[in-house]
Image (cartoon, rainbow, N blue to C red; front, top):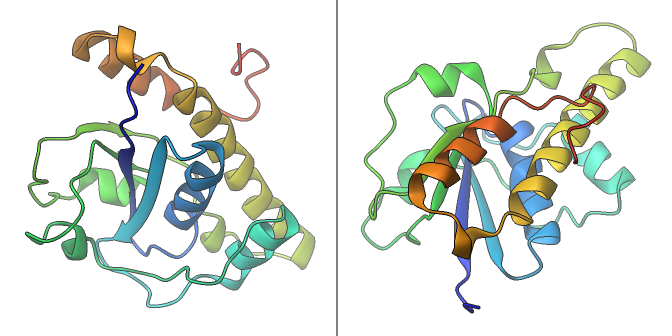
Length: 173
């Protein structure tokens, strides 16, 4: 068993909701084995109020969360990432910076709750769905036997996790 702490970066375009969820969830579920970060290709400059509400509703601390540019994590003095996950389609199609250390990457696309229009219940439901979907995927990820998977098998698992949706009844199995 290794005492290594794995650094995980969640990327999205605006870094205001989905990637913020990823950072927060992995920092809790990872129990010190994983350290989460988030960033965006075109950060909004603030965390979306709907994301803050959903995190607080689920008893997550929100102080210290901020919208960051992904260049912050490509800098020479940035933490070296072990995993980088894109959580929105726009970021997946963009050319990402070259990450030092060649981290494993996967696309875990989640519908953008900030783009949902409608009444308050509809908007809150969108944030709750995005949160649950990421929580489900991250729960599976942090429980993978990382020490016993070779790189090819681990990449297959990361890609499989990205295809899991909240409505998938067997997703946690």
